[in-house]
Amino acid sequence: MANPILETKEVSAWFGKHQAVRGISFSAEPNTINAMIGPSGCGKSTFLRCLNRLHEEVEGARVEGSVLLSKEDIYGQGVDPVAVRRRIGMVFQKPNPFPSMSVFDNVAAGLRLAGIHKRSVLAEVVERSLVQAALWEEVKDKLKQPGTSLSGGQQQRLCIARALAVNPPVLLMDEPTSALDPISTAKIEELLVNLKNDVTIVIVTHNMQQAARISDQTCFFLTGELVEAGETSRIFTNPQDTRTEQYITGRFG
Ligand SMILES: Nc1ncnc2c1ncn2[C@@H]1O[C@H](COP(=O)(O)OP(=O)(O)O)[C@@H](O)[C@H]1O
Ligand SMILES: [Mg+2]
Image (cartoon, rainbow, N blue to C red; front, top):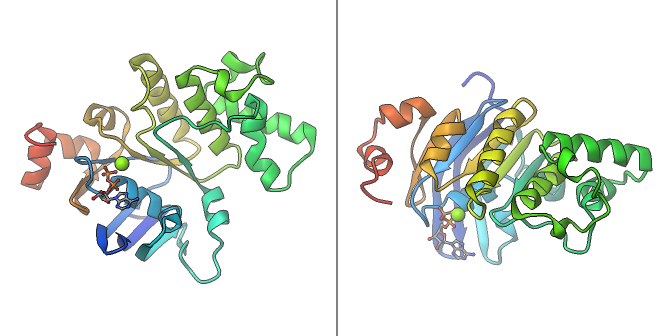
């Protein structure tokens, strides 16, 4: 790959003695959607959490290998994991707006943490982020309402807006639509396809149709290993590994 924005080299991860991720080398080109598929328990979430140094927050957890963001190792000496997480944002399966905060404050939270308090700047970034997350029209008159008063799909777009507010070059998403209804899911899929103009997306999904619909690259995981990665259309029409073929044709999973 000519100029990957995100690249891993031989990343392995453990929970205590249990190895969940086995020597994964992966790279993502800028402005692409990269889907991680594979059966439950195969290490997709763990690998994703290695990409922004969340894995190490678990007691007894350990990571080996390197993760390069624009050629810089996020596990390098002296790198602040909190700064890493600002550049590599994350959206989780269950929408998790900050419960006691308004819609506005949810989106502004990361900026305030970064020391930005000027009202006009916050207002501008909040609007831009909500527009990017395809939520502005629905909430522009509800900015003072609690984030948790929105519908599930709106809450998830609020979480996307919150992540986008600090302008991350990379956004990680762990099954972001699996708690949502089909209409909310379709809205988020459409949003992600537009968003890749601004950010590179790595998305874990148990939904193969979703991977096929929206991703540029698909990576197939099995028991902690990356079995096969490639252009999405190729993975779904002409997989090289028989295990990939068996999975995408529904023979296990
Ligand atoms: N907090 C944890 N502590 C111990 N083991 C875990 C923890 N989270 C996940 N695992 C184990 O790590 C492996 C990979 O899990 P995970 O990354 O969540 O898989 P996936 O996201 O593909 O379903 C599984 O064997 C799972 O049981
Ligand atoms: Mg998972």
